[in-house]
Image (cartoon, rainbow, N blue to C red; front, side, top):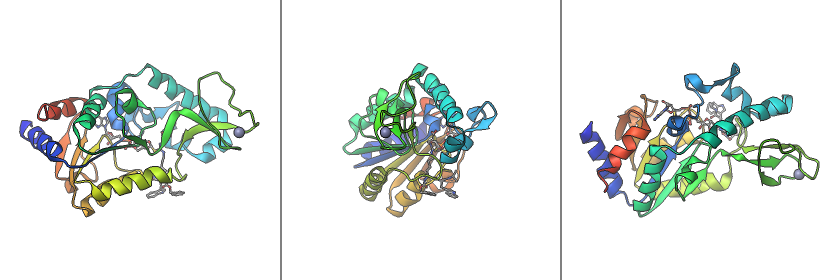
Length: 239
Ligand code: BV8
Ligand code: ZN
């Protein structure tokens, strides 16, 4: 496997502009349940059934209970070696863009700077009435001073993603030459469009995942294993 890590290291070292896409898998080794893994369930609810505006309309308290449960796990969690490797990689890269589907904030806590959160952040709330954003701590009232109900500032299924983030990602994809896809099942749109768009622009694509995914056959290098093991190994070829 060393050859593949050396090859990946060579591609990352030669990258003029590096785009990184991460998903729940990169936080799995920090103890945060992935969406579609065996631990993705909560009190017999599937995550995707709770991460919708309909679920929030139907039972805001249940959805808040789920998010506060996840916040409690994330607060106790620490960035893992995969997050730390990406923060180091950013410092070595001439031009770098990290698009994450995760809402846990662990990339920033690991020291990554150019992090773009496509699906929002679990520690921020948004007022459904006036749109005011605020940091959220458990036990605080779930209503805005304006009287509107507060929701997690997170993009739910069926909701539009933040256009400025997606447009910035597309602009970077157009001019980058290397893309690293790490810890995502590639099932959620529009993030799942990153690899085919990158391929269309002729970028080299490296994938790191525990298992093969729908894009594994289409990338230049598919590395199977834990991101927290593989990324630090690859970084050895960049030092
Ligand atoms: C939108 C916030 C326009 C919530 C999330 C039919 C076909 C195609 C698309 C659609 C469709 N029907 C509807 C759609 C659009 C929909 C969509 O894609 N649905 C899917 C489910 C089919 N998308 C949307 O609605 C998006 N908006 O498109 O806007 C629009 C507007 C109106 C109407 C329609 C469209 C908004 C999507 C945002 C949803 N919100 N998160 C929250 O977090 O509470 S998405 C959620 O899934 C998480 O953010 C998560 O990150 C994300 C993606 O999943 P992954 O990150 O890939 O995680 P997953 O568990 O799936 O996989 C983990 C991977 O890691 C696995 O591969 C595993 O092998 C690997 N792994 C595990 N451990 C490790 C590891 N790898 C390495 N190392 C390890 N240690
Ligand atoms: Zn308000």
